[in-house]
Every structure is written in structure tokens, then in C-alpha cells.
Length: 276
Picture: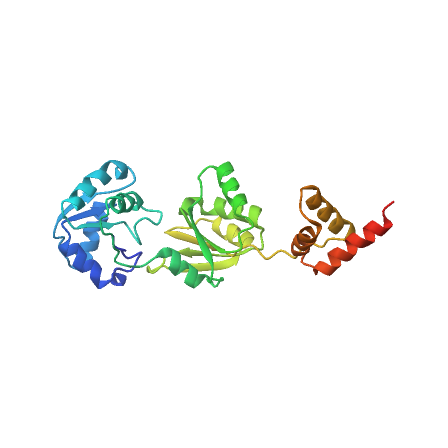
């Protein structure tokens, strides 16, 4: 498989040109866009070109695997960025791996990593969530599932759904959660809009165009829960009732409460002395 430019054609890696010229079969998400890309790169595809998109991915995968088993060099490309990342590709890679066929990649531009780098948000840990569901209820449910995620979140979104998505994010994550909307990355009208989710939702309400990647700050770290002596004792007794030895129960509760074991022990002893 090979990554293709997400906007600026000059970002295409040199190996992409070599592979386009040397492949026996090129499986393309959109053959018309592939034609425009090869014309811009000044390369003539060396093999036959077939379509490979969401609608025919399941049916065409066995055909391509047969080509691979027969020794053909198959190149998979999608409209922009890396195949398999919210694009066709996973089925073919999985099927090839199952047949013990070597799979390699020509690395290229990635909207996920580019948006992360430009967002101004923490990038040491992140998770990619792809596209959210289109239906409002399902979209809110998915956001609630990840509301406490500490890592930075990355989403793709269609421009006509951006405003409602940002509104949903502000509702679930909080209006002050920081985010960045990255639009038309590497293209002429590239724009990165940064700010709290509430403000970004208002900005997007006027309409936004182009390819969109949204980066959202992870959930803030929760302050440790404070337990009084009565709660410490209650938790120890609950563990003892479940069969734990007192020593192990005290140690476990100390970890839960973020306090020294001695504090839990003293609370248990004080309770025993005061118990009728």
C-alpha cells in the first residue's frame, strides 16, 4: 500500500512514483482521482488499474489476493493519506497476511499526524476515533463512552456535520475543553482554528468547507477522591466480608484512597475500640 498526498501533490514520496510505474495492478479508491494524481506526478501507471472502494471492497478482495498469490505486485492507494485509516485497505491487508503474503507500505502524508502536530495540544499520547456516527443519539453515545479519555482525541468529520459535532462535543466534554479544527491541510486555503469547544461550535455554525480533522484535548486528571475514616473502615470490612485477610484489605484500600496504610489501619483500630 502507499500513502498519497492529502493536498499538496509535491508531498508525494519518490517511492510512490516508482511503485505507480512498476505495479502490476493498482487498486484505487477512485480511479479518476488516481488519474489526476499520476498526471500531476508525470508518471504512467505500469499495470492495470481497478477500483477498490467501500462498495466493492469485500467482493474485490479475493480477486486481488489471487493476483498476489500468482506473484503479481499489487499497489493499493486511496484518495488521500494512508489506506486503511478510515479508508479501504484493512480487508486486503488482513487477507494477504492470512495467506502469508508479504505486505509493506510506502509511507506518506497523514491528516491525523499533521493535525496533531499543528493543534497545539499534547501529542505524546493520542487516539484516533475516525468518523463519529451520523445519527445524533449514536453520536452522543459514542462521545459519552470516551468522555473520560485522558489522551488527545482525533476525529475526521464532514464539513456539513462539523457544527453539530462540535456542539455535541461541547455538551459531553464541556464547553471549555480545548480543541482545534484543521481544515484543508497542506492545501492553498489551509486553516487551523483553535479554541474551547463552545467557541468553535459557534464559529462552525456559519458554515465551514473543505476536508476537516478535529483534535480535542483529553479529559483532565481527576483529583483523588477523599475518604473519611468511616469510609475507609467500610471499604476494609467489605473486602473482609468478601474473604480477604485484613492485612491485604487494608493495603488495597490504602491504594484506592491514596493514603498511607497506617492511616487505614488506625481507622480500623479506632472503629473497633469504639464499636459496641
